[in-house]
Image (tube, rainbow, N blue to C red; front, side, top):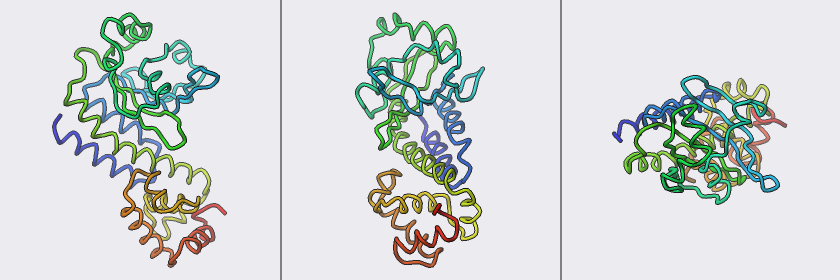
Length: 258
């Protein structure tokens, strides 16, 4: 993989975390994954977990040449989708490393599965690589990218491993910003008035939830030093010097819900 592929994804990640519009984030990331890895399909499983010994997919978003979007739970396509061995692997093991199907099954076994037959008939994508984005709640989340032809090379696998911590940071940021947007009705306008960036907003919202700087760093996949820098900027912009006063003032300004 060329270094420019990683640089393009890095630029995209920075742009996403600087933006307050999170709705298109994963479409942009999926398009870039498809381009970089010569894929034809990309699936984001936002949560797959065990319920009464059955693996449940809470939300599935797909990008294919013929369909782009979230599959509703009652969708015909979703109802007849056989469970992918990569999804089963992550749900059963909690493994956090990127894997390909060939890491789990030999080619003959894979070709004999219902999943292989279904995917070959619908998309032609029979080579798959997964990029897990596990979160601290224990839910399994992640991308599965597919293509036809040759299996993923060692260089492509190394590229995905390099991308993983970057996309985990994007994931933590996007999910926290969305939670804040859902709770703080006028928060976006109020935050703009004091010139808080989207990354400062996510740090502030986690500060209000009681997390320490170390806890915030862990949640967002950032370094403690970076979090402390964001906190310094937040204190300066709100005219405060400690956690409690900062949270109370942000609530009074309408940046945080009361």
